[in-house]
Image 1 (cartoon, rainbow over the protein chains, first blue to last red):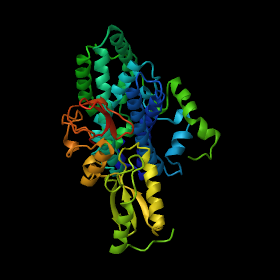
Image 2: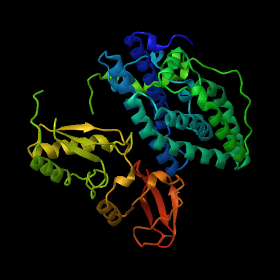
Image 3: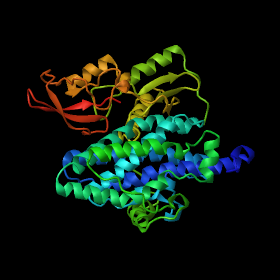
Image 4: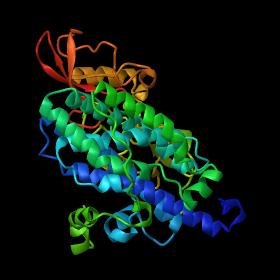
Length: 262
Length: 165
């Protein structure tokens, strides 16, 4: 990749940084919203609390990342504006987080894969040369470790559980697996930022991720699925139909009553 | 916005005294100071620096409003409130007094040196009611993001435990 930012105008760097912050923020926002759908429906009260708390942590991260995206973009959009008044094509989250919850096993498979990636990503992002990103990552990584660990516990418990729970866990990973590759994709924007130490080179996280996932799946007596042809496009706004439905629910109130405040 | 005059040492002390009276909205026995949320008072430009416990903690906004109200009531309308993310809050910043207050309130305080501990929390957790260490974790998440749900197998009472963070 030759289009390094150091040789380009500051405006280009700002655009890239704003885009990067949007990606980080949208991943957290959309998964946070998805997890909120479990509230009041989870298999047990403790699980309900856990999943709702994950969602809160993620939405907290989203507020911070989207705040940076808005500040750097400098068009007068704050985190709320970006969350509630953007259309589906302008969202930059990866496809995994927008997938429907499915059953509890699929939700935990998705959470385990995403949180395991996020721990590695945020751990690395604490060294970002952008102090704002670094401090959000340092704060959030402590919370995300909890998510990754609790999700791994459930993967093991269900995978190494009954025939029924094992089967559901296999199905859950089968559903999620095609979205794994996209989480580690690097494009021009991120490569340019990574060359300046602002963004993390996601490719460097892959070996650790694979090792951790294989460890947990082995303990859960689950097969490691073969990587099928990957589905990607979220970072460019090419989303599955599911995201539009999610946004319709999430954005309905602020769009219908634009001046509503808490 | 008009530039506020820098704070003198006396004003800083009064602000600290005011902050001592602002209680956490969800654990209304521990002040924001004892909880380690107040990172400091800056003289110029005058500001109280606070840090969120958890990124998504819904109490963060409530705490800011309460600090604002307390400062205003104390005559410090010009003193700003600034959020400081770094360094990230840790339960190690909860003061000794805060720990005692948590315990008296029925919440097991987190052990010191929390960040170096594994998330598994292999250390013993004392039941805040009967003092037994014969306790088990029921749920990693409790009534708020900062607490886990535990149960004492001696007195059989459930209790909240402040998570290591």
